[in-house]
Each structure stands twice: as C-alpha cells, then as structure tokens.
Amino acid sequence: MSLKVGDRRVRFVLMYEGTSEGTSQIKYITLIRETQTGGTVFGGTVFGGTVFDEPLLRTQQLIEYFKGILTVLYADMRPMACGYSEWLGGMTSGGGLVLNIQEYGQEYRQANDQEWAQAGGEHDGAFAQELSLSNNAPPDMTFSYVQPVRLLGDLTYRLIPLPNGAYCLIPETIEKHHAFRIEVGWLRADGDRSRLIRYYDNRGVWTASALIEDRLAA
Image 1 (cartoon, rainbow, N blue to C red):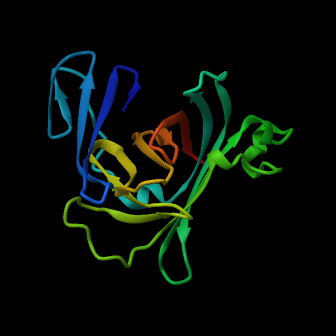
Image 2: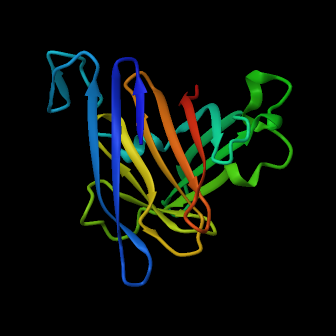
C-alpha cells in the first residue's frame, strides 16, 4: 500500500503471520519513503533530493477533527463512488480516548456542500465505522507509541504512529469469519492528510478500496 503526494511517496509493507488456530497476527511493518528527485533518506531527510520534514507522528495529532473527500473503487468493477469523510477524536469522561470515523456515500451530503459534516439520512453500513480507543491498556512491546483500538462489533485494531507523519490503523489479529479493514495514512506538515483503506469480507476477500483526502477542520 502506498500514498504519493507531489514527488514524494510513502510505502507500507504490513506482514502478518499465520497461527495454528487459523488466525493471522501482525508480525512487522516496514515504512519506505521515496522521492522522484533522487537522494538518500537518513534521519527523515532525503539528501540530494526532497525533504521529508514531518516528525514522528504522535497519537495526539490524530485526536482531532478531520473532514475530506472519499473515492471508492470496488473489486467487482462497479462504477467508482464518491463521498465524504469525517474523523473526530476526543476524550471520554473517564480519561480515555475516543475516535469516531464516518465515511459517507455522496447521497448523504446536505444541499449546502459547505456544511456536509452533519449529513442526514441512514449511513451506508459498509462505510460507517466507529472506533473507541483506551489509554489504560498495557503498553505494546513490539511497537512504540501504540494505542489499542476497538472497532465496535468487530476486531481489535492498533493505531500505530510512524516516522514522518505516517501511521497504520490495522487489526492486530485477523480472525476467521470476520470482515476487516486495513488503513494507512500520511499526515503532512501543512495539515493535509491522505488515507488509503482496503476492505475485506469475512472470507478475507478484498471487496473495495477507499482513498480519502482530508485535512484538519477549522
């Protein structure tokens, strides 16, 4: 999975390992940063080329309100669909973190395109997700700065901040007969963000991909 902006590109290699129980667990993640102008990446900077000046992403940077544009490509070759997205983070009364993600089809926008954030009607179940984060779970010894995430009614996910504004939002364990999603994102220094999501059904078959371009809302 990769995201490209201008002459910069970040690529994500996510490796899962099968278990004797028939599940798959995340083993490692590799982040590759590339530029079309050449150079060598060291310490986040491409010497002789484009600069990757975004620092290591902090979880707190994603506990904000983002909104943007959604484009969906279906595996069954249906026409591409467009829509809108919201990403809202906050704190619970008990001090935990809550992340609410909504992906709407175009038919759910309001007549006033400037105020689509509160789109009415029933949401498309395939593209409406809510996630709750807890900051009370024991630390993960594999990844740094990891917050455990629960996708309601489904699997447990991990929000994994990476260098230069990148992150992954992935299931820590893929279980049999459970639909799941894999998300990678790139939050850049100007507040713009790109997100790529791949959706899989309960057989592990890819069903759709969504590209979201959003930014911090005022």
